[in-house]
Length: 141
Image 1 (spheres, rainbow, N blue to C red):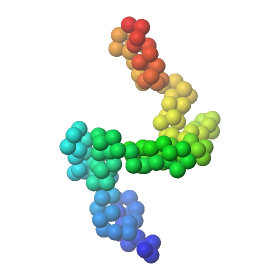
Image 2 (image 1 turned 60 degrees about the horizontal axis):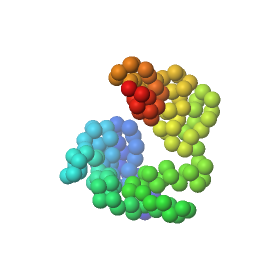
Image 3 (image 1 turned 30 degrees about the horizontal axis):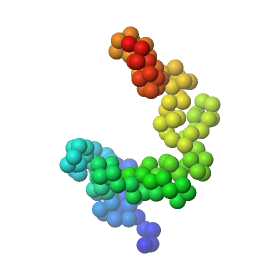
């Protein structure tokens, strides 16, 4: 465990400690997803991603918050959740400098600055910036 990373990606120059890690990384560039879920046919670039995905189907929630004990099926969801306790806001709006704990929240916020309304009603063509607002609107038809 010297920290040495002698294996380099020829596409993006990112370095890795093992050839197998480099091989797995290359799939980011090729789009190859050789690991498929036998239940829903969703595909993944690594076996570890498939293993984490399977927790959704089994109901297993092996990742627990050490602050509030809330548990999650996927490690990435725990990582995002922990920001609630630390108030860590790493996604910042380049227009007004407001910051958010999740990139999706920044995306929603940015739509207000740009006037984007990507969700449209099939019946009356009224547009909304958030899918939830379209769903609420749909009830009037």
